[in-house]
Image (cartoon, rainbow, N blue to C red; front, side, top):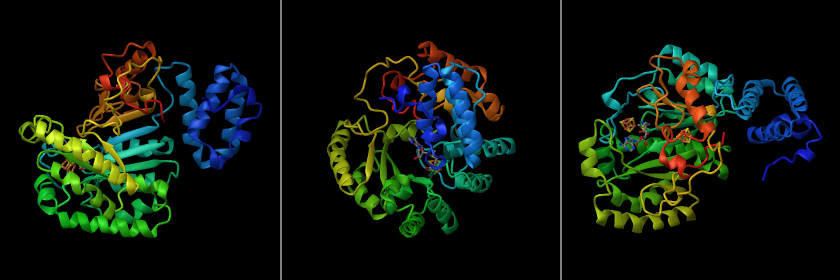
Length: 407
Ligand SMILES: C[S@@+](CC[C@H](N)C(=O)[O-])C[C@H]1O[C@@H](n2cnc3c(N)ncnc32)[C@H](O)[C@@H]1O
Ligand code: SF4
Ligand code: SF4
């Protein structure tokens, strides 16, 4: 049900939203309701009034959201609005060499120009996810992160192995309620150090203890609704699947709020490892996992830990749910190419990891150029035409990926 009934929008935007309670979702609903009922003059007047009187330090993010919503309503494929969500790999470099990962076979770092562009985009962004390689190796990360922390509206998340964290970083991360997704593919020293080659388990545990301590002392971080700020990613393979049995106890001990149980993928440089370690060629192992995962989910639930199960046959807890297989009926079911941009650790760009076609390369072009290049325009045009099967992957087309209109 729409949040706004047009009949009830007799008042202006400023009557509906006080500045401290403006929600970008509600703002979008407000704009849609007025636009679709042809109250364009009132809409423009309201938006301008609101920006002038109230937006203050939020002016860029609020006006960008307004512009973006209107551009979507007008079916624009070339946008004046900027992305609202970024997922950026700052480097392919890393302090360790996990056996399943190929990042260390490359040597990519963002250029100074891209660094400056990211800094310039921060005031417009609602979400940003930093990853790599290992972000804490990037010479730009400290400056980018410190700048990003100046924008209270900006939700940040870091994907990391957690080994280069220290007290200074942990204090900043916890105090700014930045999400931290730590990859831990073994909960004992032997398995962890075998898979996460070069990583020291004691070092990880020291950092988890520091996060625990700082988290307990920090009121905002320890609020129940912020529990999922700290999550743990575990890639399940033959070497470690037995550890699933102890994973909830481990997660509970260090106060993780979410467990992401992932599957192993093959990469260009890890084919042999993949062949040895993949699970689906062993019925016995899969049976074991299918038996264990309901217990994991149940035990986690008792401690308030969310589980994203992407390995067992019961994996309805995943963002890609294999159980749903209903082709999308609504015409424009995805707003991602209007709102989001993602780069990988080679510099390649797409709207989202599910998108099939590469849309650019930050080694060659700026983010701004890529945002409105031919391929981004084509993504938008194809989604508008309802004929996007050559650009969009099956999980999206079959309704298995959620949150495609959710920024
Ligand atoms: C490339 S890492 C970058 C962030 C950080 N260095 C880390 O380890 O979390 C991002 C995620 O990809 C996962 N990953 C690496 N190689 C993988 C593979 N072959 N299959 C599935 N996930 C993989 C890592 O475990 C990690 O959770
Ligand atoms: S998975 Fe992360 S920590 Fe491991 S080698 Fe790859 S980038 Fe580094
Ligand atoms: S693959 Fe298509 S539907 Fe999925 S996120 Fe990309 S553009 Fe949207």
